[in-house]
Image (tube, rainbow, N blue to C red; front, side, top):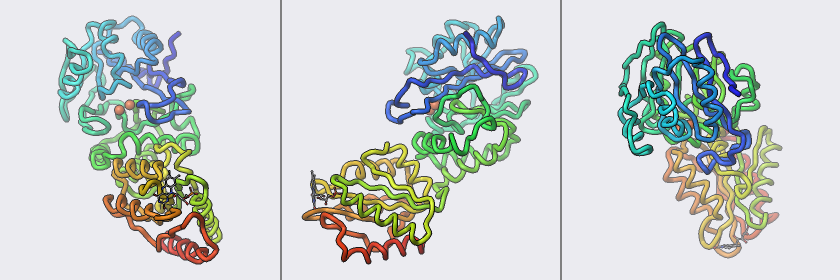
Length: 398
Ligand SMILES: Cc1cc2nc3c(=O)[nH]c(=O)nc-3n(C[C@H](O)[C@H](O)[C@H](O)COP(=O)(O)O)c2cc1C
Ligand SMILES: [Fe+2]
Ligand SMILES: [Fe+2]
C-alpha cells in the first residue's frame, strides 16, 4: 500500500522511514529510527528528487508509482550518491527507463564506482545551471562536503523550496506528521538533529558556512531535506542552529561533565564537582559516564556546551579508553572554541591529565582552566579545597 503525502498540489513526499535499523552508517545508534526522504514534482515534466535506502525500497517504489499515477518519470535529480539515498537508483532506472539522471560530474563518476556504469540517460549540472520543467525552474547549487564531495542542492525558484540534501536533516523516523511545525521539534527532535549534524557533517563547518551564505541570498519558504521533517515555518530558528554549530560556537552556556572511571573513584570526584557547581548556582548540569554513553552523544554534547569537565583514570600509562576514544572523536570533528577543566586519577603514576592536555592542545582555541585535580586512587578530604577552587574557576568563566 502506498503512503504518499502532498506537500503542495504538485509536490509529493514519497520517502519512507526505517525503525528497525540499530546503527546508522553502522555506527550511530538511532533508537528513534530514521527517514529517507524523496519527493516527486508533477509539472509538465515529472521530477523525482533522490531515491532512498534499500531498506525502504518496496514502500518507496509503491509511493513513486502512486505519486506519478501513470505518468512517466522524466527526471531524477540526485543530490547525493551515498547509498542511504542512492541504493535504489539503478532499480528506479530499470522501472523508469525514460528518466534522465540530473546530477554533478562527481556523482556520475561515483555511479560508475558503485554500480559499474553511469546511467545511460544523464545530464551533468554545475553551479547555477537551471532546468525548466514547465511552471517550475530548478536552480542547481553545489554543496561540496555537505556531506560528501559530490553533493548539490536544488532551489525551486518557483515554489521557493530548497531541496537541501543531507543538510538540515536529522535522525528520527516520521510518524505521519511530515512538517517540523507539526511536532515538538525543540524538545523531541533537536538533540537528535544536533547529534546528526555534528557527527555526520560537523567536521565540515567551513563548507556548511559557504552553503548558509548562498542560502541567505535566496528567498527560501520551505526546506525539503533528505532525512527528517520538512520545514515551512520557523526556518530561521533551525538555520541559526546550523550557523552556530558550523561556526563551532557553543550553543548553550553550560557545563557538561564527562568521566571515564574503572572502579568509580574518578566518577565520584567528577560528581562531587557537579555538586559544588550546583551550590554555586550552575543550572542545567549534565554528567555522562563515557563507558555508557555513545560517543556520538558525547561529541554532540561537547558541541552544545561551552564548558566541559573531562575526568579520566590512567590506564596502562595511557588514558582510560572511552576518554581516549572521545578525544580522538572530538579531534576528528574539528571540535574547538571551548573551556575545559581536567581531573585525573592513577594509583601509582597518574598520567591522564598530561595526556588529555596533549590531545586538547592539538585542537583550536581550547582553554584549559583551573589547576588540574590529580587523584591518587580516590578524592581525599584534603583535596576538597582544590576541587572547590576548580568549581570557582569554572563559574568565573561561565
Ligand atoms: C588495566 C589497568 C591499568 C592501569 N594502569 C595504570 C597506570 O598506568 N598508572 C596508574 O597510575 N594507574 C593505573 N591504573 C590504576 C587506576 O588508574 C587507578 O586505580 C584509579 O584510581 C582508578 O580510578 P577509578 O576508580 O575512577 O577507576 C590501572 C588500572 C587498570 C585496571
Ligand atoms: Fe550523506
Ligand atoms: Fe543521508
